[in-house]
Image (cartoon, rainbow over all chains, first blue to last red; front, side, top):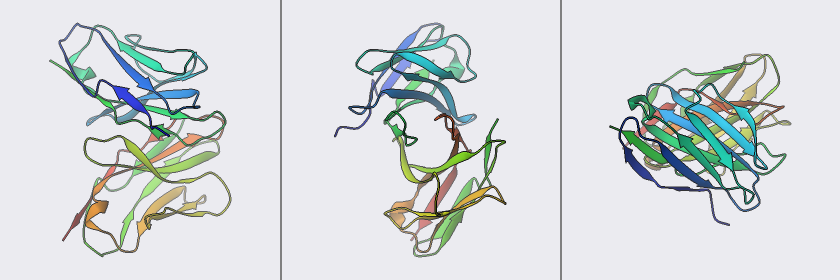
Length: 112
Length: 113
């Protein structure tokens, strides 16, 4: 069974631009969560989607948004990029009712 | 609210030596506990988890962790490490009512020959 895939793997953007990251969960997994990893703040939860509905949201500004499609694929959007948004963005999927999350390789976003 | 503290940011050890990576958590509700490992330029891989039952849990590659409710700890141990165990290790908790993970700051384990 294929693992969680994230595209693109690397991205360079300029301050003020917006960016969209994509995550394809493991087949059959309907829950997708997003995390931000930075050297200063560590791993922080952004949000979780289940069956196209946002179920939980972390403490991030409204510039961070997401959505989930009917095939469980998820996208995360960051508008008006700031230098501090440079991070590794990780996506994780899980089966409904299970607590084990499977992580993708991440998208490395660099904002210049 | 939950929090996780990993007591050591870096742990250098020699190959074949034992190692313990310490993790303490704080929560007002019941939690599930996890250890994840991250190799350079990769995502997180689940190493082991405690959901219920036996407080000692083991992974397939020789790591074990013991849930201690009274001390709110979930320390990770391995009796003999290999060079290939060099990685960053993250302790995490989630409430039993949800799946949102709260992570510790991470411990960089470096195994030297």
